[in-house]
Length: 124
Image (cartoon, rainbow, N blue to C red; front, side, top):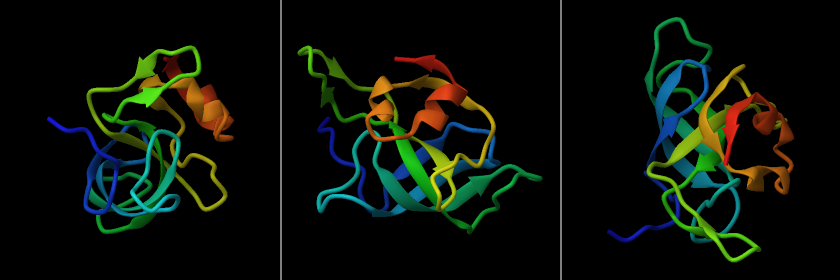
């Protein structure tokens, strides 16, 4: 199975408690090919929990926290995850939810998403 960038119409899992379960990427905000680990995307909510902060059909911003595409690290190792996952943020870049589930890579620190790292339960 070929691992590719997160591009238009890619479905992603939401790993925070903002109320959304699954989103579909509308646009990657950086790069022509698509989004990678730590990049921002614009997404449409496809599935949501009742009583959440975001509803089905909302257009939201998100930061990719897990990607199935391998990403090389400076010490020579590679990091890749089993799924594509996103944390929903507002226009200023602050997370909508108050908890982040599952592992989050420490590459987000370089991309200035320190708030997401502080909410995460496990940093990979």
